[in-house]
Every structure is written in structure tokens, then in C-alpha cells.
Amino acid sequence: MRSALASRVDDTKLVGEWRELLDRHARTSCALEHALKAHDLGVSEFEVLDQLISNPPTTDEARVQQLAEAVHLSQSALSRVVARLEADGLVSRSMCSQDRRGIAVCVTPAGKTRYEAAKPAHRAVLAESLGR
Image 1 (cartoon, rainbow, N blue to C red):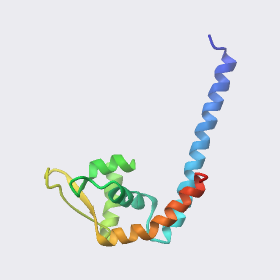
Image 2 (cartoon, one colour; image 1 turned 180 degrees about the vertical axis):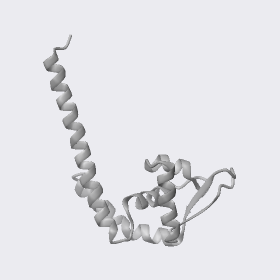
Image 3 (spheres, rainbow, N blue to C red; image 1 turned 90 degrees about the vertical axis):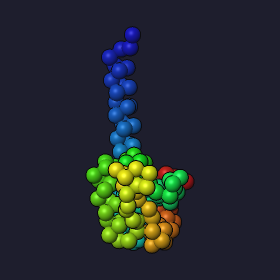
Image 4 (cartoon, rainbow, N blue to C red; image 1 turned 135 degrees about the horizontal axis):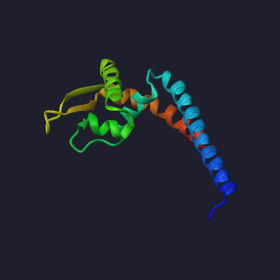
């Protein structure tokens, strides 16, 4: 049976690791926001473009629900991000060709251009933040 002291030590270590993870995430997110601002993108906007371009759907369209899971946003938050990208001409939305209840998101040529321009800054922040 573990002692109460061992349990507290494990608990303190666990919480410390959690806080380190949160700190690293916050620092990286702030650095990414700053770097992507020069390209008129936020982290969420870039992540959506990155998912659409780096992991293209097999049918050339990504359902919003699948995209939300990939970028770890709620469907309502993702809808707002996609609306901003669409307003900027970086993506287009349409009804899914396979299921008329779903919404499909596709990257436009302007979206690909903006993504490619921002990608080096994004990757440089990741490399620095992750110690590579």
C-alpha cells in the first residue's frame, strides 16, 4: 500500500507536469499568434488551412464535423473560423455532395497562397518552441 507521502509527491509531480504543459502551450500559442499576424491569420485559421491542405479529404471536400475533430474546436467555434476564412476568400463552403445535410469546406487558390506564405513562420515558431 502506498503511503500518503508518496501519494502527495506523485500528485505534486503530476500537477507540476500539467502546469509545464499548459505553460509551453500558452507560450507557443502566443508566439504563433504573433508570427501569423503578419500573414493576417490567427492560429485557428492557420490550423484549418493546414488540415485542409496537409490532410486533404479523399473526396476533395471536408465536412465541418470531421474538421472540428481534427483542429480540436467545437462545431460552433469552427463555424466562426470558417466564416472568417470564407469572408477573406480563403475557403469556400458548400453542401456535401455525398450527404446534403453536411457542409463541405474547400481551400481556394487564395487560401493555398496565404497558407504557403505563412507556413515557414508557423514552422519556425514550432521548431523554436519545441526545441528542434
